[in-house]
Image 1 (cartoon, rainbow over the protein chains, first blue to last red):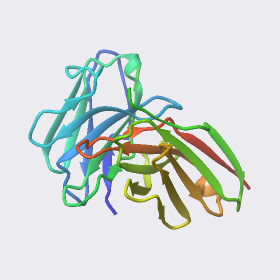
Image 2 (image 1 turned 60 degrees about the vertical axis):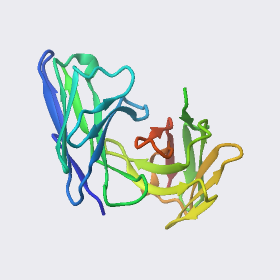
Image 3 (image 1 turned 90 degrees about the vertical axis):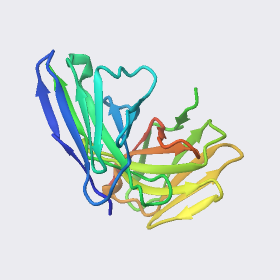
Image 4 (image 1 turned 135 degrees about the vertical axis):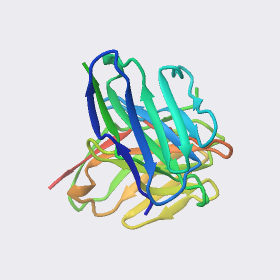
Length: 117
Length: 112
């Protein structure tokens, strides 16, 4: 089946630093990847849609200058949380759509837990 | 705005019983629905999906029912096992939108 990986799985950083999270589709190509954020005991909230070779599309209320997204290849998207603060602590999850598969199934990565001190 | 929500936040069942998890959606344009299972500290795992031109779809031990008239979706798990304990999310989308909108989730607890 389709596999999506994320790195790192967890990260602890100091307030004010930047953190980069990678999302990779391991056995398929994805022209579109998605970044979600999930707070404890809550649902997944879409942050942005990452498009290979073009700018990401951000959801309302998500600061594009704070959450930088780069989708430079068909198998890799990165999310950089710039100048992280404690309120950015969350579980960040990416997903990817197989460009060759019909339908809208998204395959999710295992998530990255970010803790900002 | 449009949303997808669930009726029950927590469902507790006995091992071997059948489980039914419900989901209501509000966007009448939604034509694609997915159920995901999320275990603690992990990403969502695809369970089963259904398109609006169907009202029922079966997988291994799971069945999804779609009632477009009342905008209701359900996931039935047969012979529930302890390994089924997790949070279940429904998600929806519609033609032309690539992203998914997730419901609030239901925690399924399976008692041995």
